[in-house]
Image (cartoon, rainbow, N blue to C red):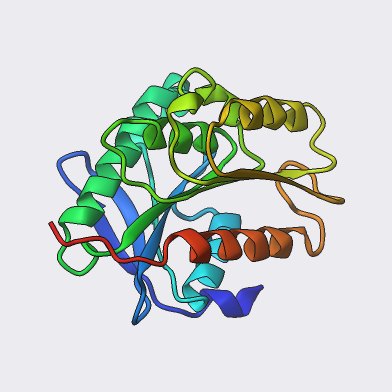
Length: 220
């Protein structure tokens, strides 16, 4: 796993919200994957950084960011405020669209745990131009009320050992209206810590994003 961390990424900050992020843009990238982390996690998440490094190796840009400031994280209610997290994710997407070197990149979301709910809530907004969503061990059911409005092709990845979360993902899958797929990763628990299971996530996520993030959008 360690060799994937050698590629340099840029420390960035979104103002005035004071959100810290890690931006990596490989040469020739056409799409960018914006990460929405799970409760209590952020841009330094080792699992999401591993996935992000693999996506960059496949030619996709990545943006890992903290959806909350350090002060906001002190209030646990913010960690589970899906509306707030979705709003921050939307803000990050706008920031990417306004930045000259990333403005033409087609955006996608990768959500983990509660971050998957935030990603789908953001993708359901009428003005959203997100082109694909991938959920890893996610709680897409937290956005159940707006899932019928999600237009982006959505891939749900769930571990076979993740018990009730499988049912939560199935309910969300049934509510999604468009292109969608659910994959149960054998032998994986909620965090995909078991040998080889995170590599399965990488394989499926890479295929999904390369399929749907292949067309540059017009610069704004």
